[in-house]
Image: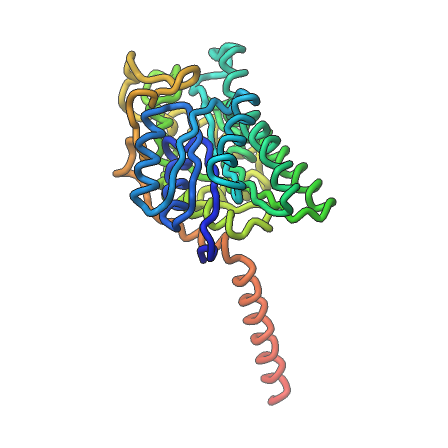
Length: 338
C-alpha cells in the first residue's frame, strides 16, 4: 500500500536495469525521485520515464566510488527536494572474466563501485536520517551475496561484503533502538543492460544464468521492502531461495555443480563483439540510452510467485500454524468420539 504523502526517494544506478525500474515504480506512486548515475543520456531518459509515470525527477550525475561526489550529491538532493525518506543503493559494475585475467586496478574499481559505493552513500545519508529520527535505506543485493559463482570474482566479493556490512549496521541500529531502518533485497538473474556494457573477457556474449526475471519484478521487491523495512532481508525469485537454501545445506556440492555448469550458463552462443561497450571506467550510457531492459526480454519472466511468498511469510506461517492446530483439534475430537 502506498504511503499517504509523497516521499523523497534517492536511487543509485538509476540510469538502467533494476535502479531505473525502481525509480519508475516510485514515480508511479507520485513520489519525488532523485536518480543517481554516471551516464547523462541514460539519466535524462530515465528521468523522463519517472515523470511520465507521475513522479517528479531530479537527475544527479555522480560516481558513487568517489565519497566527495556522493556527499555533494546528498547535499544537492536535500537542498532541492527536501529530506530523503528512502535511499536505495543499486549502483554496481563488474568484470566477466576468470580471476587470473583481471588486473588489480579492475578488481579495485569493481570493489569501489559495487561495495564502497554502498558504504559511502549509507555513510552520507545515515547521519541525516538519524538526526531527523526517520528514514529507510534499502541495499539491493543478490543471491551471489551468499553464493559465489565462477567468472564473477570481483562482483561476488563485493556482494558478500555488502551482506556483512548490512548485517553489522543493522545490529548497531537495533542496539541503539534507532527509528532508522536498513533492509536488503536479494535478487535473482535479471534482464538488465549490464550484459551489454560490462567489461567481458569471455569468448561469447555474457548472459544472466536462467531463469531470468524482468527488472520490474526486482523493482516491486525494492518498493515493498522500502514500505516494510523492519525485515532484515527479502528474497526475489524462486532461484534466489533455492540457491540460498542449497548453499546453506550443501555448499561443497554446489561448488562442483557450478564448476561444471557455471561457465557455459553465463554465455550465449554468440561471439563477444570486439567493439562491445565497456562501462568500468566510463559510463556506456553517456551519449546513448540503453533503457531499463537488457537483450533477454524473450527469455525473461515478468512475475515471481516467490516474491509474494517472501513478502507474506509471516501471514503464511500463522495460517499454517492455525491449520495445524485445527488438524490437531479434529484428530483429538475424533479420538474422543471413538
